Image (cartoon, rainbow, N blue to C red; front, side):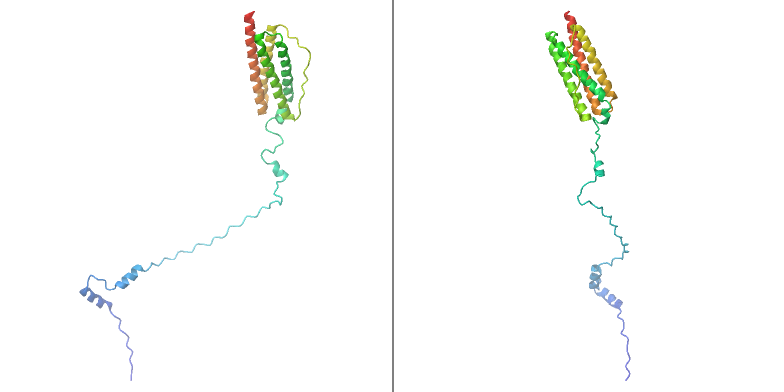
Length: 227
C-alpha cells in the first residue's frame, strides 16, 4: 500500500480578511498582533565601539627629605631672606658721613639755642626752648638711622665750651640763616639718597628746619617792631 505525502496547504489569510471585512469592518482582525507590535521595544541600532583610552602615564614621584627641611640654598631664595634689607641697608651706608655731620650739627645748634634762651625776652623763650627740643629729637632720629644702617651706636663729638651769643637781633638773624640752610641741605640730601627710608627721614627734617626758620623770622619781626 502506497502512502503519498501531501504538503499541507498554506492558509490563505486574505480570504479570512475579506470575510472579516463583511462581518465587522470596524474591528481589527488581529488585535493581539497589533498590541504586540506596539509594545515591543525598537531594536537599537548598533553603535560603533569607541576606541580604548590609554591610561595617562604616572608622573615620577619627587623624593622628599626624611626630615622635611629645606636646604640652605632653598632657604636663601625665600622672600625676605636677604641679608641686605631694602631700607637702611648698603645704599644708605653711602651717606654715613653726611648722617653723622647732620647729627653733630643738630646737637651743636641745640646748645646755641639753650644759650640764647638765657638772654632772650620772656615772650620769646618758650619758642626757643621748643626749637632746642626739636633739634634734640632730630639728633636722636639720626642716631637711630645710623644704628639701623651699621648695627653700632654713634657717639657724637660735640664741644662743651661756653657759647657767646652776642646781641639779640643779630643772633636771631644768624640762627635764621642756619635753620634755612639746614632745611635746604636736608632737602638736597633727600634727593641724592637712593635709599627710600633715609630719603623720607631727610624730607621730614627739612620741613622741620624750614619751620624753625619761619619761627625765628616771626621772633625777629616782633623784636624789630619793639625797638
